[in-house]
Image (cartoon, rainbow, N blue to C red; front, side):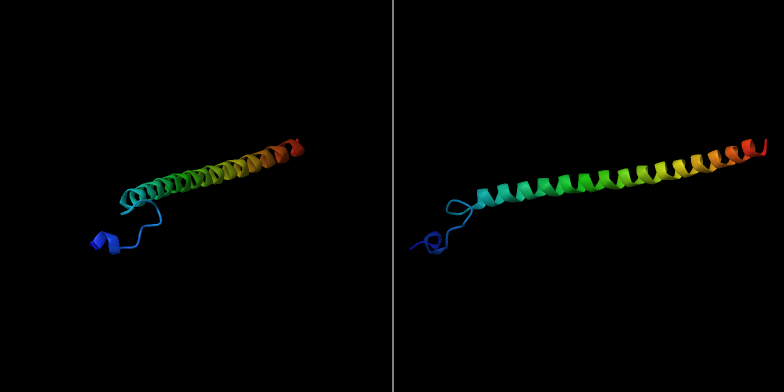
Length: 73
């Protein structure tokens, strides 16, 4: 019996299973890249939302000041 015959078969495919394992690793790496890209997009959007909130607060403050001036008139 050769060494290959004594080895248990890989559950992902053929005798050695190397090709299937490489495909699975490549697929996992692709998903990790997508996850990192989406995480970066989420962070960028959080920054944009924060900037918009600050801008809105500034507009509210300015409107409040203008309203006070008109009330005095």
